Length: 594
Image (cartoon, rainbow, N blue to C red; front, side, top):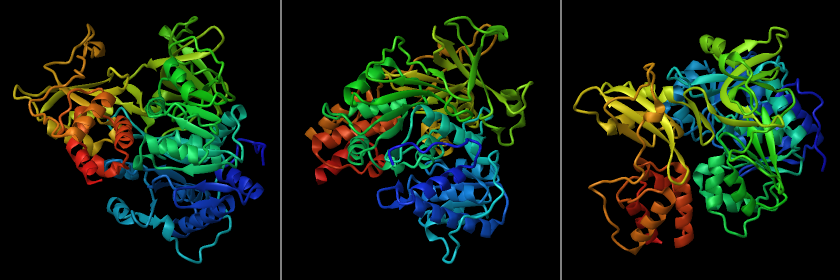
């Protein structure tokens, strides 16, 4: 089938739309990973079985069920099975610290955890007595027919936990019809066809996961699952070409690292559409991308959030001229009405900034059990109670042709590597240490343009604080993307005349760092490795005994460096093993063994 399968309506359940696709193209490939391929009929049958397992254990009803998977076919079975059981899913990133997983499971009042047989022992250790179901060990004799449940289009489908200003993550609710409409409005402009292959490598705990996951399965395409954390950019690039991916989504920072390892001949002729969202996209990013991708590609800069998903889009083709340094977030999309509110609640003039306000029937129902936050950010339209109004806290301005340019945030929330991060959550954890009296965070760019979270602490006494204890606490309680690259001790936080933190006066991090205990290269291999890592990470000098993570390297930068090492020494690096002991000496030892 070469035509798109049209949506009859957006006001339907996700699994009902999926079942319709499965009835039209039952033998087409629905989802694949490195070991498995399922057709639409297979996925329909197995997700029905999962739903019957859930109903048989919990009975009929609603409520949240936690999911803990890498990106593989079992994740697709789990999500659809939960939805078909009449319940909503709560994705847990497998890399989250145990305390964060436990908090989410408890806060969401999850009645079950679905995982793999391999991870079921670990799941039971954090389940606090709730039922654990292994998706790859479902009991025999379970029906594979479609279960009858009371799910409605307005029922909650997913509760996604994002960073929260109270120091705890908050759950954002999204209904079936909201997510179906998201896919409809996206594919009305940028169609996904049954012959497409859509790559899915982002964590299911990240809202952008739905772009590829639902985009493929609700349009009849093949969803190709990949766990990027088990590889690197060179392997990822090769795999994209070999599998002939035609639809992909990237965070701008991911795109930059992806482009950094490309050879001149890399053209990706099968890649039709590349969605870009989650961070600011710059004109220079587009110019570099055009040198790598095939001229026929259409790149799309999206404005989206966990509460609203796709709200604006800007299409970039071969001849598109971008006049601003920041790539615009573009033009209106169906069903999502955006307006700007400036100072004194007045509409700003041309090129004047204001807060983006969303009005829509398809915006999130709000936050799970956070009434005060709900009241602050959400309201109902006074003329139509079916329309919800959401204050995004995003700042933007209009160009002359109704095109919107996003310029930042009005609060402590930032976007880094596509994740929404509330600095207040990090600060709350810093202040749990009795040696820390005050704390602040900011986002700063190094000389390569890579952004880092910088934490500032004011010690409680003249004796200072123990940075290793503070960092250990942050690593234990926060996911990797929220952990500050650097912690800087200062005597006091700078304040403005009103007594509020003056963020602009926080001192810059010295990217050229120093240490009295740096080991120098012992041989030519270590010397070559130092050259590679100093060049890629933009950190100098690097001692061969230094832990990359402790000197401010982020995981994306490390993947690029590992790719360069693979090219130079013609070896395959086990990234997981290397990350366990991330320094030059351990990497050189691996190379010597080959």
